[in-house]
Amino acid sequence: MTRFSSKILFIFFLISFPVYLSAQANLKLGTRFGENWFLGLSVGPTFFSGDLNTNRFLPQSGDWRVGGTFTFGRQLSHVFALRGQVFYGGLAGKKATKQDGTPVNLRFNSMVVDGNVNTMINFSNLIGGFNPKRAFFVYGTLGVGAVYWQTTQYDLMTDVVVPNPASSGSVTAVFPVGVGAYYSIANKVNLGLEYSFRTAATDLLDGIAEGFKLDMYSLLSFTITLNLNKATRKKPDVVDYKKEGPIILNLPKCDPVPPMKSDMGMEKLPPPPSIVPNNLDKFYLFKVQIFAFAKRIYSPETIRKRYHIPMPVSREYSDGLYRFTVGSTESIDEARTIRQRMVEAGVSDAFIVGYTRDGERTSLRDLN
Image 1: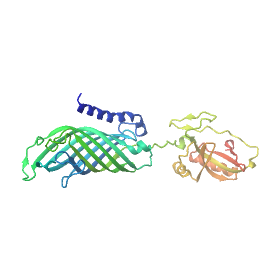
Image 2: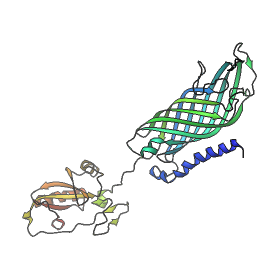
Image 3: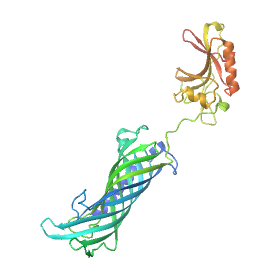
Image 4: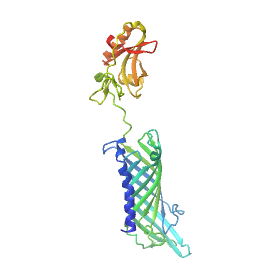
């Protein structure tokens, strides 16, 4: 196996390895093939580095051109994405003499088209971990592809066209590497800046083969990316109270009665122990409980609007549960009236709870 072939296999390994690692993490985004895709466009100046421009990363005066890319890809995880990319642009360069003073007197213009597949590695999420509130990201890319180019050479003094081996067009392998940064707007549109340099497996991009074994061209581009159907953090489903009544998510393991699964995948709150006190006078306050959750995922106003509760809703926390109640009265008869209004509104499992001045909270379900 030649050294060149070994380099190609090594680059393919680098690309495929993170893709393999990220397969399980794909569940954090969308799980279906049609999800997590994106499209992107970029445009910016191109620079050439080779025999007719010995500067590695900067063009000589007047030797920069314009290029751009069209990108499509899929987010495999919060760290890795796989991109397909098409580049189109121009290249230019010139050289009057060699370092030893030997005259060269050549300049060139070239049209370049390449297509490549590359892995995009999100360094921000790789190093800092996934953070849904993060909006600015730094990343790197590494890929492999093929490039087609057609070069026209000119005599620098007379501007006469000079025949060259690439004047009719040629194709070879290309290896793009890049770094970039972008700002994500509402997880839908990314605006960024990317610098990539592409090493071609040839010394003839400029039509002359002398000192440089591999020619390179670079693109400094402004990018815009549109995320298509990119999944966001999934919110827990809430069962319609008209069908299920009071519900609870993620019941603690210590609950005395195993929860019953509903058709919606929710867990129904087991009835609390019913206690009928001998003396209602020990309770100084009565409320009507309508819902309870194990996690603080809803505000009282959200519950009121979502379930059309016709009065203010309050939230309290005790024994590992966030309980939502309505009403606050010293009269048990008024509490019964409030509970009846909830039943008529569709919350059929609403029940009365009593509070003592010592902080004791007791279900008065049997008094409903």
